[in-house]
Length: 266
Image (cartoon, rainbow, N blue to C red; front, side):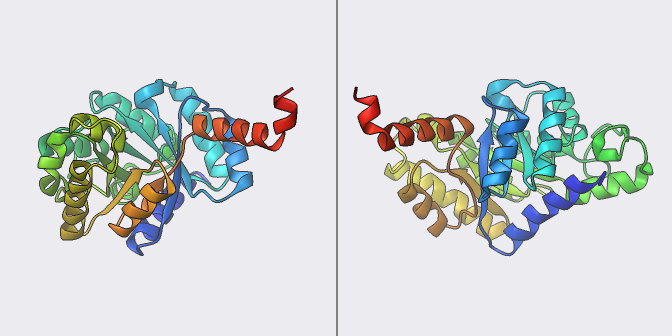
């Protein structure tokens, strides 16, 4: 059980390698163990990506949440800003099955992030077997490093004009498992905020898809509608995040109001 998160993340990698769809949900504002349990009970999602970039949850919150997702049969990784080496390793030690870098602008920046997430010889992550990922000091150091480098998950977000320009070089980096399109920030960076079907946005996504196909990498994205999801899927997107914790609650309230229309019109 100590290494269950490794097994779970291997399922993400296996599904992507088999060109299967992975359904994820972004969680940050409502990061609570009961909410995560409900996601597991309802089924349908393969996992959760925890949004540290926008919410700044504590390491203890992540420890509890990662244990909860494991018990609920859900996979997880953590989105962080690519500004803090220590945060990357702490998230992995706390039980994050992987890390995703937000706001990447260059291949050089993406390479640095990979090195933060990987032990030598691939990277320069500091070695400490005392976390959950090291079996709380019960795993030999060499075995732990080899297993972590092999099985941990690293994603790079493509959500800036600059990262699109360097997407081929980013996709070529050894240790990058997934490129993840952030359509909101990408549209903003391209000067067409919120116009997700704008030709410039579609052209940028096509470049991501082509780079991933060339280098044998998978790509994922946040999607904003069924039509948006279908378009991305047809272009090769396989890790799909169609909603978030806040959006699920809003949708539930809206559905309730519609179901009890007469009550809410009194």
